[in-house]
Length: 390
Image (cartoon, rainbow, N blue to C red):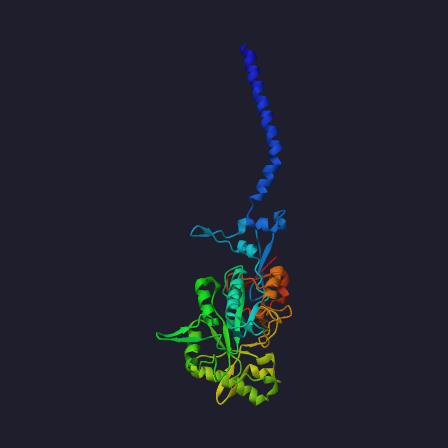
C-alpha cells in the first residue's frame, strides 16, 4: 500500500509538471509580446525590429566631421535631475524637432472696430493669441529670429508678431485722475495681459513706426517708445513719412530711412533701429541701400528687411533665408486668398514636417537628416548640429 502511495505521489508530480509545461508553452508568445512592449519609448517610436536597424543621430561639427550615435537605450545618458530622467535623444524622438522648418511672421495693422481686411478687433486679436498658444506657438522677437536665437521649449514653434504704421489702436493711453493707464483694448495692453497670464507663451513684438506722430498721441510719443523697449518689444523702421520707396531716387530713399532711425535714436538715446518693413512691400530701385546708408552724419544699419507677403518665412539656418526679403503673413481673415493666419495654422497642422519645431536647446540645431543639404552652415554661428532619421 505504501509503495502504491509513493507511486501515485510521483505520478501526480509528473502530471503537474506536464501541466505547468503546457501552460508555459501556451503563454510563451504572450510573454514575448509583453517583453517587446516594455522596451523604451525610443524603440516604440521607431518600431525597431533589431539593433542593426536602430535609428541614428549624427552630429556635425563646424569642421564638417560627422559623429554618428546609435539610439540604443543603453547608449543614452540617463542622468537624473530631481528624480526626472533627462534623455536628450529620447526627447528628439518625442518631439521630432525640425529647425529648418518654416516660421510664421504675422503682420497686423489697425486694432479697432469694425473688423476689416486691415483692421483686427480687440476680441479677435485676443482670440488669435489664444489659438496660437493652444497650437504650440511661442513668441520670439524678430531680431532674435534673424540671428537664430530662438529660445523656446522643445516641441514648440516660434511665431513673430509685427505691427505696421503705429496706429493708436496698437498703443493707446487713457488719461485718468490718477494718471495714465493702458487702454485695455489696445494691442500692447492685450499682449501685456495675455503674456502675464501665460508666461510660457513668451513675450515680444516689433512695431514698425513712421513719423512725425507714431501712435497719434503726440504728447506721449517718448513715453510709449520707452515703454515698448523697457518691456521687451522692438521698434522698427517704416520710413519717416510712410513713403513709397519704389518712386524715390537714391538720395531720398536714404533720407527716408535715416530720418526715421535717427528720430527714434533721438527719443531713445542709444537705441539702434535694425529692421525695416517696406511700405506697400515695394523695393527701391537699388536694394542695397536698404542695408546701410547715412544722412546728415547719421548712419543706419538694417539686419532685416520685411515684405508684405503672404507665406511663412524660411528658417534662419536655411539656404532659402534672405534677410533682404523676409515674407510675412497677413493676420486677417478677410481678402486673404487662403493665405491668412488661420490658413497657415491649419496648413501646419496638416503638414507638421514643414514647420519649425524647436529642440529646446539654443546651442544645438536639430534637423531631419533628409534636410541636411538645405542647411546653410555659415548661418549656424558655431552651434552644434544634430541630424536624425525620422
